[in-house]
Amino acid sequence: MSDEGGGEEIPLTVNGKDRAVPAGLTVRGLLEHLELVPELVVVEHNREIVDRSRYSEVTLEAGDRLELVHFVGGGKAAERDLENRL
Image 1 (spheres, rainbow, N blue to C red):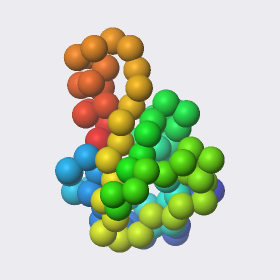
Image 2: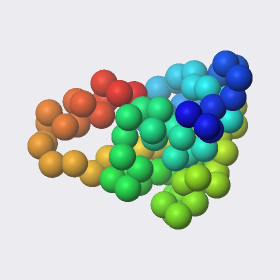
Image 3: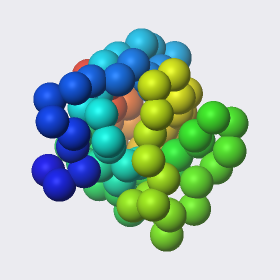
Image 4: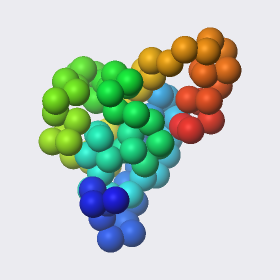
């Protein structure tokens, strides 16, 4: 993926869980890394909602906190699927 750095990882908190992701990811890059469709996700980045038009502009940094809300049908099964990706 073009948004990824050279193998280095940074720590983030995503939906309350600590995780390491490739350095240099944008919000869009993170969503793609998690195999989520960016158009179906609302992202809160450090307590600010990110407009979808800016997903490719906002670069993630170590220690950032994100909340992802994924809009899908399917009830509990879909909710578990999102949790498994995170």
